[in-house]
Image (cartoon, rainbow, N blue to C red):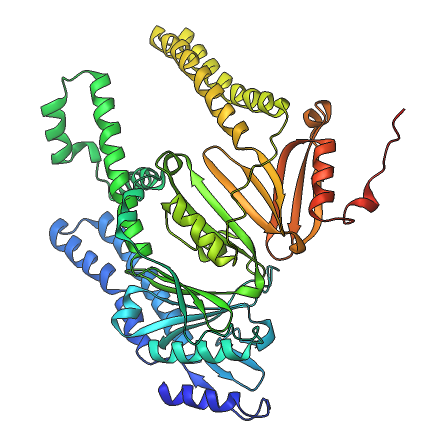
Amino acid sequence: MSHDTERLEAAGTSNGATEGPEWSRLSPRLLWVNLSMIAGPLVLFAVTAALTGADLQALISLGSLVITFLVITGISTMRLLTTRFRVTGDRVELRSGLLFRSHRSVPFDRIRSVDIEAKPMHRLFGLTSLRIGTGEQTASSSRKLSLDGITRHDARRLRRLLIDRRGSDPATGQDDDVTIAEMDWAWLRYAPLTVWGVGSVFAGVGTAYRILHEMKVDPLELGIVKDIEDRFGSVPLWFGILVAVVITALLGAAISTATFVDAWTNYRLERERDAGFRIRRGLLISRSVSIEERRLRGVEVAEPMLLRWAGGASLSAIAGGLSNSDDNRSRCSLTPPVPREEALRVAADVLAEKRPPTEMKLVAHSRVALRRRINRGLCVLAPVVAILLGLGLWLTPVLVHTAWITALVGVPVVIALANDAYRALGHGVRDRYLVVRAGTFTRRTVALQRDGVIGWNISRSYFQRRNGLLTIGAATAGVGCYKVRDVSVGVGLAYAEEAVPELLAPFIERVPRD
């Protein structure tokens, strides 16, 4: 593959004719990656056959799994045999497909990102995937141009070739890449402070139960379950529930910590000499993500509740041409969960500001916004209490007691969460940024460049109209809409006019005062 990349570089210096450069192939090592995909299902099938003998149901279930992986392997191998790519003087081209042929051509000036990702099996064979993003948002063109199966050396050289020729801003004047932040293992203390680990526990238990059920195995009849039942079957119900909650929390914390280690090992955030940022991270799956500085529109500081209580936060970039999808939100992560001061330092460094614009005194919203949040919380609590009460009157008095205890505990919790959500509300303007903050379970503070706002999205529900409130959102091309929620009509419109003068003025009808 090295000679292919050298030919590509030579093509980049040609006159741009599409007939000159030869087409290059993916690495033949990808065949071994494809074959390794069926190794696990085959081993599982053999072990199950040896342990269960002629259990037809189990063999059919695992046999279907093996066939599925064989089909996937065949498709991947066909992609290896039919994929061709080349770089001409002004574009990169990709051809693929056997029955349904695809030919994609991306000019250099349309390239928004050039990312490198290597999964464990790819890394084992010295391969990686290079993904070229164009920032297009339509359903037919949102997929990236992907070279899935080239050597690491070729991927790095091709990435540099594409970045140098995509029409980036002039170099920053620095000779080498500058490190803004890198991994500090003291940050590991923030890893358990997420709820995703607990969710993974429930998902894993549900998946295991479904698999055992499909194999006609009753989980309650397993030896380890029977042993636990014999040892602890006589303990009180409340104690069993407490132990289950503690075990689930510990497992969730362990999964969150393992996920943190896998995702952020070898983390490094750099400002490249070609006026861009590069984020490298990953243990099992190695990732390298690039963001053009000229497309940076701002930053977002996220503080999930548990992380906020521990004084932590995470930082993400708001960049044009990357959309607001889940995949791109992950790509725009600039830091893992870190101390809040560190997140603010990185934010100021990335935006080239002395102080982070997210740190400013924001305008508080009217008390009507607090009342709306209390009402929303009570509207969620009331049906839960009503269902428990109805079931209690129908089935057992235990649920009646559960209902009034839930109401007694839930009302103060709702009020506390509503007050926290209200205190989080705020907006303001500082220098060339508009700042928006909201959220209680995850408090988000956004600093958005004012010159990146292309319009305002104003919405008013029936209850907002009755209370003289509105929600106004700053729309940015290729990024999304960042909303100021439940703000008074006059304050919201004045904020929009201050942030981007004359943009909203043609649509405002001024009412004369008596």
